[in-house]
Length: 461
Image (cartoon, rainbow, N blue to C red):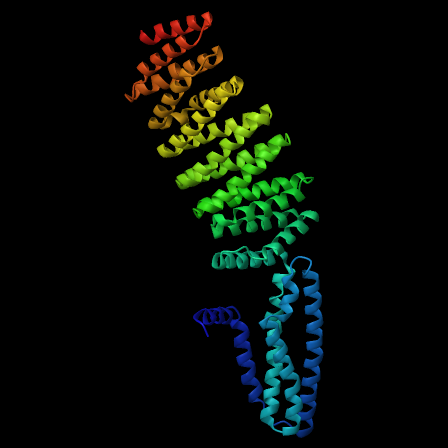
């Protein structure tokens, strides 16, 4: 036997120690029985043989019924009847049925006591035998067992396990029957398989399988919500375990669902997907995992690019809002690398908005920056305030409308510069004045020129 076989055997013995103890005690008692009369021997042996035969027939019938009922959820159910455990019980009962018949011919108290011991063992072992059926009867346990088995097979063989189809079948039946709690827990186990395997080779399989489940729920709003929320939970699990490729799979899958929501003009899906990506990013901030944070941020950017082309105003509002929420979370955690990543992404988004001449969305981003910087908690991170100040000055240089310039000058002159001066930190006054001069040269509106002149005079004085 291999070492793994001994380990498995030890786990089984440890799990069922109480039944093993009962069997040992029963065997001791059965051999402690005194001499048995000749007529009683044959009666006892005959009763044991008939009783075990009837009991075995009943057990087989019940097992077959349970397996057929459970086959609705998993093809493994009927296979359970051919497992080593069932074959062991069948052999034990067969031995228990025929040995008393042989013992009747041998006419010995020893064989009678042995037959009584075998009969008792068969009856005691019925309890763990039927307890083992709970994995087939209780679907949640069946899902858990299948998930663990599939994860183990995919890690070892590096190929997609065929039993993944059993899990998918259970999920689709649960969705069809509107068993939402089961659908929710099953989906998390299902997505966690790919998170735990952590292999990018399964990306296409993961996307195809998740798309199939999502397509089946297209008319079920609660089902769609559960799918997105389950992806979020698995995404947070990938952050906790720092599963690089698992995180990539989940975030990309969420982004794809969001893009489908953009194309179908479904504001709810886009908002839920963006919120889920933001929560995964937030988890990455708390766990200080830059790789997971960058992946979530990148997928949010891709989703925003899709929303710029075909999305509604509400979609763009929520994506922009969650970008700013992340900036707030970063300032709370005082993480400079993640703030740098966010600033790079937001600068790319800003360049895209200018290129597409989407000034309204750009003003929304600037307005949310102001809202965030007016929150005292955002000003607790000195280095962050300085970096955000530099970013806003860069945005100012690219501004050409009255609303953009007034919003940015208000944030910089009223909040950023006074705060940095008070803390004796980096002085952005000269950068701010240079940015105003760039704006002055790039615009032709007289009213904007007058406003910039007044602002410059105030800044210089």
